[in-house]
Length: 536
Image (tube, rainbow, N blue to C red; front, side, top):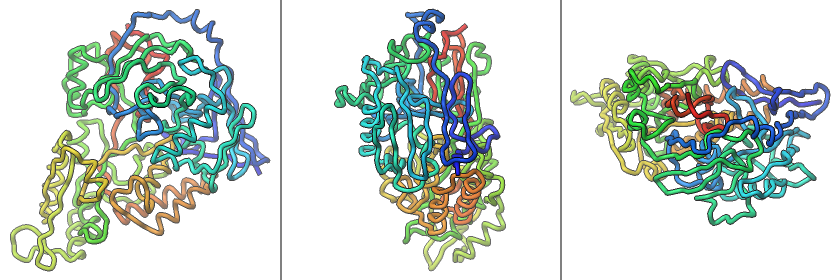
């Protein structure tokens, strides 16, 4: 029987059949065979496009990315996210602004059986250096990322073979999120026949822009790719500068940049009266939370203590402090707008009495009357760790809430929070996470809470949760997939390895005198588009 594959997406849509969108957004779905096949319409002739587009060859803009990530190699860390944000790197399949799968370097794909996928490589595509994109180069690029990137195994690929103009993927086991995972920027296709010693500073890609210069911790310089297979960009050159979230508003008002993602919400009030600066928002897919250290020997290995702190947290207050009107309180792993029936999950909300009962159940009470609880004669002290570059306002609010409960709370500001997080030598640590990596939430759940997950810094382990994740791998139909997401969220809510605080709006500041025709994506690792215009 033909199997339809689904991925969850925002904007009220709960399922997407494997849809590659061309100019007419066609979708091909069968009903009686195993195969699901999607085709896209052809791309407009490049010469005709160039003749119809008025290109200002002197146009240039400066911008600030959501966050400045070191490196540009998709096979290293999060370098691929730089490439997609900058419009340099492209994947076989991507996610559009409506959270639908769309063909990019592939124009057609199909599922053959539970383990096998055929993906056709778009013909006529060249890298920025003029090299023709072939299935062989695409295969080598993917295998390189799978081998070298610590997250590469998320694709669960057993083998990749070339079959004419196609790549044949065989997965290690049934994996319903396979197509979604192909959209992750770590699988950006680079020219593996080029000098790979420059992959971290000047990778050769297929996007509308190409890297011309990279200065570590300072800037990324880009120019329009004259070999681009799609629409020729009207903006000729772009510089991405390393600017902190707290100063992005100041920078755009001063004219130092023309566009910025990820400005600190508390600074947005400075834009009042700035008629040429648009604040463009879309419901985002990120959440901010704190991770509890669940490792044996840490007081927070006790689920009752974790739940007590969660119920003692007034998320409405936290969201107002953190979001300045651009954040919503969150009590479950996924924002409601992402889907996955989060409204069916019973999450924690502020309840001071229940928090006190749980604290007592965990064995803590204030025996000496000093206002702080202890257990076995030892006062409970919880340390909140956060980066020194972060605003302390939320931490201070949490400290007040938890100390009202009777938990002695300290705040630790660190220059390098990454080491402490990796070592697991913390009590509570802040983090912000993209919940739908690759347009799907399965990787977010598996990497953060599955036993041994690459981002499972809290050392949480649950046989019940691991079992649901296995079930999700094999959930190819919509109903069972949604049910597995609900079950996974409920387990996390009950066992509380994290305290989910708020969901963020995705905000971009735009100088309308310099840039026009901005398309907002819920996923913030998409930004630069060849469709951008040069302003008013």
